[in-house]
Length: 186
Image (cartoon, rainbow, N blue to C red; front, side, top):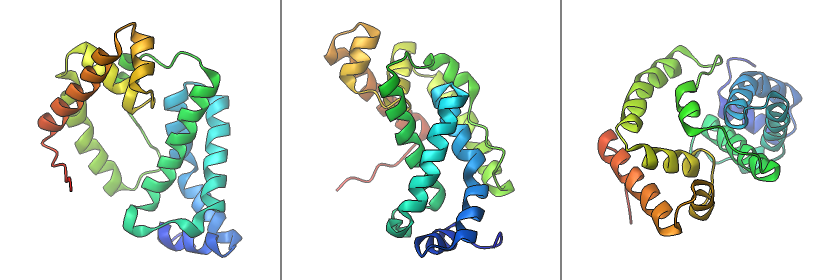
């Protein structure tokens, strides 16, 4: 089973194959937990989020669509959304964005190809974020990573709502320009 693709494992999970589910969970448990703990900063809460994310992946495996992205992207998006929900429920102050940026995302469960790609991207992303003014960088991390709305950023940073929106938008535009990201719009 371990030689099967992620998509094949999800297809197996969709029809109730327990072996496929166990293989999928073993393949992703460390990544999912790592993302949750990096966002929440609390190992116990991260365990809960990781367990729920993998449970949802199992329950909703039949709706996974390869045209919309990879299995890794799908399961990590589930994890990210659950972690954001957990932060909102706890209403605790999120980890300081500067501290979050210094941690970096390390996954011990990557293939060599994925690790090489991630390693190539991290310095570029970090350099691009470092090039932003601190107030834009902070607003952008709070909005994108922590999933805060512009109103939440405004309240947390004690700035007017329009200023929060401007900082987030300007930060995204500068980040795209620095990273030379092409945005396809209809």
